[in-house]
Length: 151
Image (cartoon, rainbow, N blue to C red; front, side, top):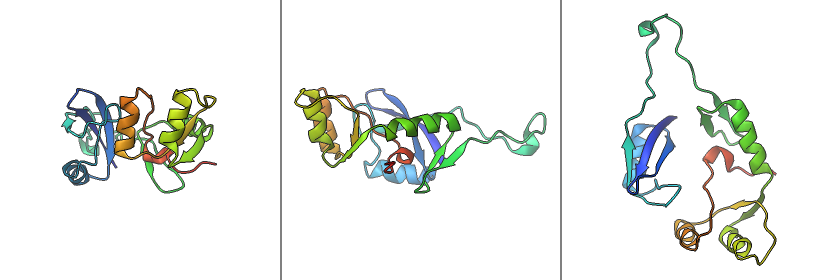
């Protein structure tokens, strides 16, 4: 797994996790990479400060620090996050109601106070997500290692 620093056409910066540089390029060509803030698909890779130094070149000959790699039940890697952060994020997700494909409908009902507010998660297509954003409904996409059903 490789982590790239990315930016959309509107200047929002975020990280993207990919199996390889080639996989990022493929997903970018197919417009599968989009900004989690504004859903813009015009994404650029930014220079990254993450540098790997081979053992023999390390100043004190100590092995390079390895990122935390946790795997969820589906085998998805959560690289670079401390185990405590992963555990806390999973706890937050566990305390949400999975409404599945009804997410856009339920998010609207909560936003327009047609139903009591509650923490929900689910799926929305790119068009549905864009419509929610245009209506001023706040939501965030979850990274793949958190989206497995935790109930």
